[in-house]
Length: 458
Image 1 (tube, one colour):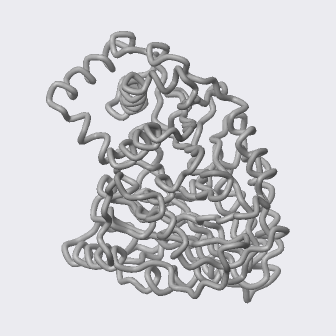
Image 2 (cartoon, helix red, strand yellow):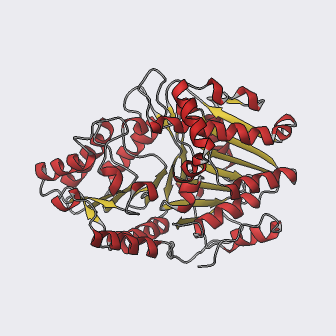
Image 3 (spheres, one colour):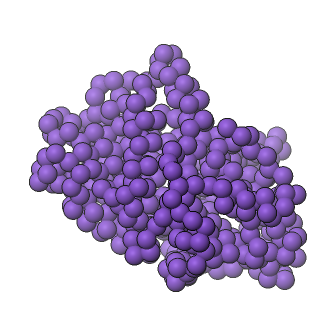
């Protein structure tokens, strides 16, 4: 694989040349649909499962043992009963399945739930696989996305749980796309079969072996899988010209992956404007420098991030202090420092930063839009961890004739609905205004520069 060279002095043509050179497959406009709410996504996913005939492959970070997760499992059992020959598999991160949600009980985890399902329905042939991407969750997780149902892909960064499916009052907001494309479905399934399920560390969850920790032999197998995933990408022949609606599926692990190269070249290819969404503001320096370079060149940039209250790790100040609860404040400090350096671009309206907040709901939106011609659908958080440690994928959409413009604008306006622009960096809280324990901890880690390490791995 060609090593990634982040040189912001590259000419625009070099970035465009990379994007043009990516193989792409034709996508019909009437088979591409954007959804605009988690409830709509939940309903469409359940409907697609109920109508499946050949195969269902649900790829997600986790399948939670709550009402939302049980709804999905119940739907799978129903369709399996109606069509016994249908193939159903679920892929989740192995480490994440072995623990509960942060702050929840450790006594009954998702793997325990899967085991109960296997014992209760021993002959259903619904397989749940756990994939360990590294020997420790902190060093990398299985972060692929895509619910592949026959020739449809429901692509979202959402996992399968109450909040992502908006089962109760609280929700976590993401992006949701329904793409019907048999070739794309086959490409994604082929990668899963050849690179993941064939691996010796692919654990069929619900059996006794899945409950055991990684021994030294299995750790070696995990390292072997990781080494292999650094070298492989989606394998397919492109059939699209540069003048039609097309998709380039991308997958990668490690900083020199094809996906990371595509993210960098996509950002740097902008001629007019770029819109970027991420829930956590801790972008790596290479992307920060690229954005600053674009501002110097006169491009317009809009960044939409989540307020700290909308962060996965936010814990109200009246609840017990935990180390993980510091993260939303650390990300806010990152954003404050970024805006302080670039306040003049905010003043002249060239840089717009919006903060998403809607009650106590969560914000989990990721993506990049460039010049109304390109957009990236991905679960990638655009942070150092995603670019170095996690197994990620994405769909790069090329729309030279702006056929998706109306849908894209509606999606972006829906995202912006609960945002407010940051006019000045001082409108963000200073560390002295944070809860006492949070402020004290942040002062300590910044003193020894541990905040840089935390930003890289969380």
